[in-house]
Length: 139
Picture 1 (cartoon, rainbow, N blue to C red):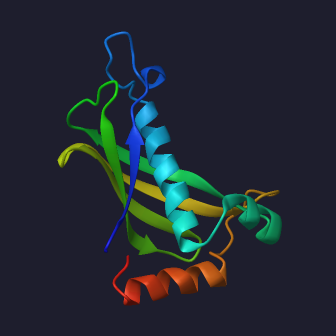
Picture 2 (tube, rainbow, N blue to C red):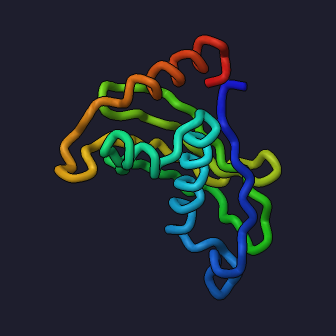
């Protein structure tokens, strides 16, 4: 496994009056997948805040809309870590339906102090876990 994938069903509330997923909801889907990726690695965002006084913010992103998703579609949201920096990570994400890629994105997430919002290093246990997963071929 070189990537993490999270399934998401499109609900009526995710769509416009034509049954097409509203563009900003793709960001929500990708956020959920990144959160579940962290969970799969053993990290909860609430614990990161409580134990390390850190939060993870989106620094920047780039998206390509290729095809729309519709009400009741089953989607697969893929996360693939492409770079782990000192206080950030870059992830390639895609959203697909039945193997057809609908959305592609590059997301840069920054690790910041929960009070000052200044950059802080990725916690050592998280860095170690990510590096271990990568060495074992899981990321």
